[in-house]
Length: 284
Image (cartoon, rainbow, N blue to C red; front, top):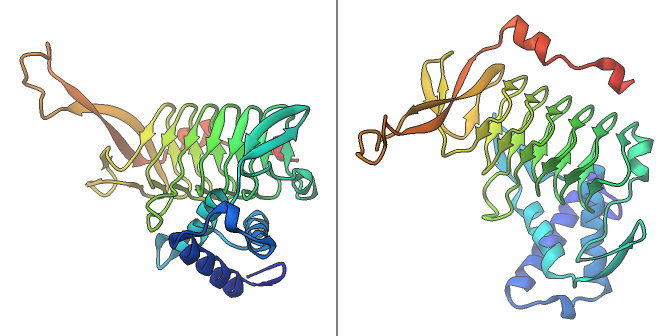
């Protein structure tokens, strides 16, 4: 894929050159118009979906380190200044993204609270309800619903036709740069209040119960394959929180025993699919 003004490989080379210079001491006060043009082209490529912070290769999600370098450079090589939006003055290194492109893609967003930061991609026929926030480097696929009080973190990768329930958090990962960010694959339905953090990958078409925390530190008890997983929920699972006995369960301070959270994953059942069905009228 290419970005305006040059190929992706050209842009990657320019970003990596700037990254090396920044590691050697280049500061925001030292950057010139050519450097700023490179940073702007990089943000344009992210917003067009031409480059992504992570991609699936050989069945595994891998970080594109140079893309994450570019995101970090847009913080380190820009200076915070006063900006205006909707009659409000705010202070940041980046402006908000231009939302005109959303309408051109058939995507809807409600006013006074749907915030898309510069450098984020929101696909076609998506819906953003207020208040919600999509951060730089994030990729939100076609037909996805970002519901009220949702946050999509820096570089998070959210697939097509995903339903993010209200008050959900999809975390992002910028550092370390070699670590893949949170990934929500296509067709996933997250219940209200879910949290997905620290590079966790949710497999396609899975349904996650409300208020479930998915993080690599919490085990996934997969009843389908009879195994315990960390950091990954396989495709087409129904997942929900349960509590298992803690290794300090017999401690005298815990009356009745101590327990820790775990996630149970089972086969999807028809009634689960019916309960999480998408209302196509919302997307017409």
